[in-house]
Picture 1 (cartoon, rainbow, N blue to C red):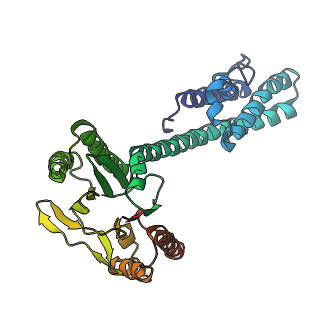
Picture 2 (cartoon, one colour; picture 1 turned 180 degrees about the vertical axis):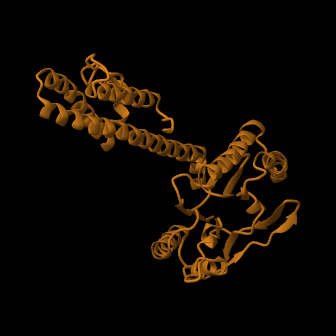
Length: 359
């Protein structure tokens, strides 16, 4: 039995044309004397949809054009079959019937392929919408221009929808920067990061909260208590790094559950030392004018394969040290080319997100 199609009109059209094909077969075999029902190719249910406004969105699909053409040709063979029988032209009668059956089967096959293409198109559009939604949530990054003298970002999602996200906000004279990395890919990872970013956005908008511990408690409650119940059997988790930068005090507070925050000091890049604090790690340190900081997701580390270990943690530090004299913009440009060359050579295995800013 044929699988039910996702587009209702195509499901009806397939059923109708299979039934019509069988009626024409009965007519040919002499099982019925009634002439098969005939309508113009634009007047059956499928024809009205193909030539009507409801299918406008799909008219440029190659399979849509193929279906339209073969559907018209199939319809045009039926009156020829009837007239050939009445004229007792057996040769034409048999030839046109064979043509009709082949075309009818082709119409049904094209209907099924069109249904699959429409599903793929709608899925692709959904992914693009999800990507725009992600970007919309991250739209507050303009405030970073007032904080950093130079800044650069590398964003290389493995797919259209990414599990890695950079989010920022400005509240009570403090700048907040959050880097989120979902463990997983595609829609599930995107939903995870988008949900977390939405919680952050809502918390800032409602409470104007500037205490990092408040966010730790919020994230703990939602993800570690509630979210895990929802995805109990799924291999989904997240890495989270939040920076609270206070320019008036020249200090940075850190809340993170990983160790991917690095800083340039005395021409040497190094990791910021974090202390355990429950499910997160914390730190607080002073920075100097012109100092560079960088945060990244484990997408870089996950690119590790036997042939190339240059994008592991040690490789990242070595690369940044080689270009330590450059500002954040130029450094990011060189690092971007370095990453892209490895992706081209060895392939990309995960989302990549890297942010560098010079205070």
